[in-house]
Structures are given as C-alpha cells and as structure tokens.
Image 1 (cartoon, rainbow, N blue to C red):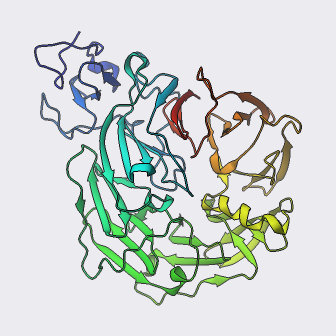
Image 2 (image 1 turned 180 degrees about the vertical axis):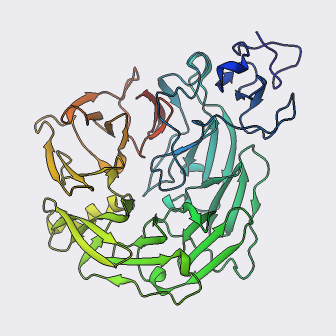
Image 3 (image 1 turned 90 degrees about the vertical axis):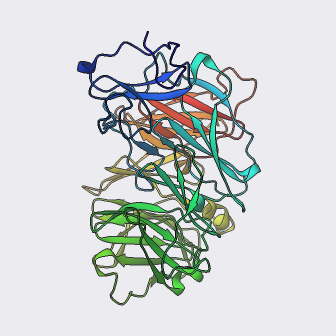
Length: 460
C-alpha cells in the first residue's frame, strides 16, 4: 500500500507498489477519485500534472495515453493500440453500464471525447458539456462529475471541443473559449481583428485540430468565413467568404497542405495552408447533388455523394488538381428519401486507414473500397434478422473489427474473417436496450458507447 499525494496524507490507498523499472502505468486511486500515473522515478502524479509532486521533474505522460475521439482526423490522434490496457484492470473502468443525465436529442450532438482520465459527454438538456472521471471503482452505477462547461445555446455537433495543452477549446455564438481540463474557470480567447460578429458557429461543422506550418491549429468553419487559431500563441487568421453563408457546411479535413470543406449543396471549398495570404479560389459547385462530410486518406479526400434522382456513390477528390471522380457506385436511394439520407451526412464514411466502408440505404449491405488498388467489394448481413445492422455514422473500427451499435444491439464485423458478422445485446443486464446516439470512442482496450440514458463500456 502506498500513500497517495491526492488522498489524506495520513491514509493509504490501493495503488500498486511503485517500481520505476516497469515503465509507465496508469491507475485509478480509490481513495481520492483521481486517475494517476507514474513518473520515470516511480512517483505517483495526477492525470494533468506537468511536474512531479515529489521530485519536481517535468512529467512525460505514457506514450499510449493521449486523447481519443471517434474520428482521429477530427480533434485528436487515437492512443497507440498495441494491446494497451490504458487503465489498470484492477482500478480502471470495467465493462458495464453507468448512469448519466438522460439525453434528449434534436439533431447531431457534440462528439464524446476521452482525455487523460476524463470522458467528456454532452448534456443538451441542461445546455452544458460534462467532464467525468473515466474510472469506475467498485462497480458504481453513476459516473463521478468533475466539472461542466455551460452553454447559453443549444448544443450541436459544431460545439465539439478541441483539446490542446491541458485545455479544451470550443466555439459558440459569444466567442471562442478555453477551458482548463483541471476544472478552473473558463476564459475567452481574445483575437485581434476578430470580433464576436465573426464568431457564428455552424451546427454541423465541428472544429478540426491540425498542423499549419508545424504549429497546432484549430480550423473552425463559421457562418461568414473560416477561422484559423494557432493554439500555441492564440493568434488567429479570419478569412471572410460567401461560401460559408450560402451553404450547409460540414466538418473539414486536412489533406497534405489543404483544408477541404464540403456542403450538402454539392460544393467543395479548398484552402491551401501554404498560401493563406493569396487570393482565395472560388469553390467548385456541382448541381443537384449533396455531399457528406469528407475524410482524408492516401493524399485524396473521400465522401458520399447523393444526387436528386437518388443515385448514390463514393466520391474521390484530389485537392492538388481539383479533380472530382467516382470511386464506386452505391445502391440507389429513392428521391423521396433524399432529405432523410442527408441527415447522416454530418459524418464521413467509415475507414480503417486503408479501406472505406459505406452501407446501402437499409444498412444490410457493406460496400468496401480499398484506396491503394481501387478494388471494391460488397458483403451482406443476414437479411431477415433485424438485429444485424451496419450504420457507418454510428460505427468505429478497432482491432480489425467494425463495431456498429444501433437500437437493435451491437453488430460486429470481423475484417480478418471475411466480414463474419456477430450480434450482441447492449442491454447488459438492464431491463431495456438502449439507443446509441454517437459514434463509440476507443480508449486503450475499451469502447465507450453513448446512449440516451446510459454510457456503456465494452471490451474490444
């Protein structure tokens, strides 16, 4: 038993014995409700400590212990996944169900994030984003609330925060804000020549964290233009453009030196990061077609395209040449379902970094496209069994498997066994099955699935 610096100094807690030679380890302190990790000299420190409380040396977090999001191209890079158990099994979050405030959804919610021992969950009923400790000692039924970010407006996907340097950055109609992950007071980010009239967020357009001239930068699509915020020195460039005010803009991606936005009105806007001061080119417009949010793979950008006649395809865009091409044809969607299909376009196609996965309109066919050789194929799920469903906008790839949670349960497709399908109930001992409302997040060897009335933790 070791004395934990965050519990009463006269008490002990269940931390494992300290042995610096074993390398970094992340555990949950049952006495003080903190996630802690060990420095190179074997001392325990809380999750967001910058310097060791015992030896004052600068701390380096374990390499596999970073931030996780549903899509690594959105706000973060996933932790390394080499059979890592990020939280020690004896002290960390165990497989099961925990309670959260019930969520009433109207449109797309901010994405859930996992950051160094915290899980960030939207709470639209009270217009705030809650931060909970990720650990779940003794099988407790509710997550422990650490702090909240209050909002003065409805939560949307565009309110998804960006994480950098122990802070969450987010945008609402009153400005850009910076919240310390340790729970201190939120503060505005003041920018020269950028006023509150410029900061009007787009509901379907989540910020992107990327690197511009080797500096971490937040790219934000706004109602009147695009903002580039340098997260190191908090300096911003604002580019006013009518493209943003006249279209329903989705979340951007970075492809080499380009930032690409697509719209539900069939437009593509390309911003060259190396030529910010030059004249901004006009967006490319395509008539009677709708584009989903894009994803960047292999030097190109991919997104789903749907035209007014109901024809669907996986589109490929080369930002250096400006050429748009068709990767594969998908099944047709009747014209009457055009608007219904657009609802899913806030999210890009699913990918494992080599292949893209798109469903048919019923969720019973899986289209697979290999970006290296251009090979495409199709796999079918059991047609008569409603429990098997593939919903790309609610899915994630982990351990060579696609995990797709729906109201019917969890469909798992094994990518190494010819897409063999399995089904698992998500009730997990509860009297009713939950309704998943966001893409799962993988963190170490766990999947976190946000539902309307609970948070699920699954082994992956």
